Amino acid sequence: MIALAVVGSLIFFGDPAPVALAFSPDHRLLVTARGTVYSYTGGRLDRAANSLPPPTSGTATFPPLPTGSRATHVSAYAAGHSMQILAAYEEGLWERRGGPWQRLAVPGLERVRALAVNDDQFAATTEAGEIWSYRQGRWQKLETPSGPTGSIYGLATFHGKLFAASFENGISVKQGSVWHRVMPPIISTPHARDFVTFRDRLYVRYSTGEVDRFDGKTWAKNVFPWLLRGGATCLFASQNSLWVGQYGGYSQFDGTRWTHDLKRPQLSNAVTTELFASQNTAWLGTQDRGLFRISGSEIRQFDQRQGLGDDWIRHIYATGQDVYVGLFRTGAYRLVDDQFVRITPAVQNEVTGLIGNPDGSVTISSREGLFAYRKGQARTLDTGKFTEVQTMTRGSSTSLWLGLPTGIALHRGN
Image 1 (cartoon, one colour):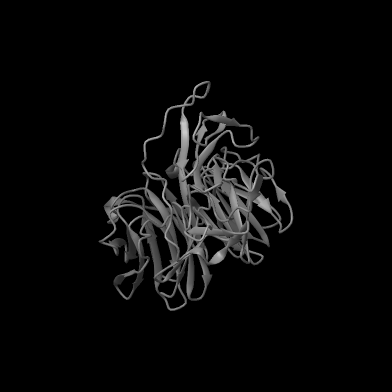
Image 2 (cartoon, rainbow, N blue to C red):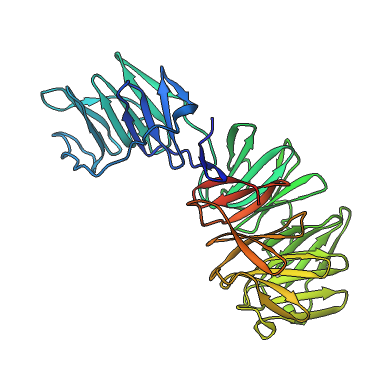
């Protein structure tokens, strides 16, 4: 099951964490997640719930804690025709049917996020994302929706699956219509950042500097513990090499042996933020030191003196004689002769991705929308209400997967 909503040219897969509950007039339980609405009929999750009006958590005033409760506060409350129910945080549920409040001893419902009541039926969802239903004297834990969780910062397709790196919720993996999550101890940390594929292996870098490797079946953790300058700061994979950014340069693996480029005085103490290799040239982006072009022993720096709006390089894309960079503060630029020219005047802040397309255009993602640049012009691509794009990867020749603060979207067409 997936959190699915269609918005314009996008298909959105949202965070499935339940945040509100309600009962429909025909007695179905409705669940609002951050991306969509689900309904239950006979305890089974209904995919066709997206047209239903979503329940909301509301702002009604909660009653005080029942006499005898030792909880800190009421975390949820709901009232029907013949009963009321409230959740005492870290203590559990209490119900009232015309008389005094009575404690309900239900293990697993100590931290309830939302409640709903309909006659003698009620439902609860917990902080952990579980959904429980009580009907005809019986408790039942319901099937929960699956989907990408958290704020998505990295995307990759590998062996027919979509991998999504979230800021603090590990890696979400989509195979067909089913999602599952990978968390420690299977992977090193829950703070996945970005992916590259090299020699039929998927590598993931974490914000803490570790790099894990996945061969399609098994995860290997912290595969580069010996990096000479500490943790990895970025990854890049060319056809022949895996490049690992570090402080002051990079290390390069050709599948057999490693070489290190960490002693250039121009890069001393520089934070390597991005790498791109094209033919015999390597492009290295830094934090506040601009862009460096490296060809053998030769190195040249590009910064604000060559037209860049700021010197923090977030992304690089080069093809033939064309070089594009995305900056942290002032959008995207293209190298023309020896000067950089701004190509996204509408973008005032960070560029979060650059992808070259078969038609020669370049797709640019940013926190202010998605753009296509071709023949000197940048046009805005429709993303509906999802204007903040944090990462992207190609889905097909005509589609892109987009990482968003609350999930993932598939963008169809250019």
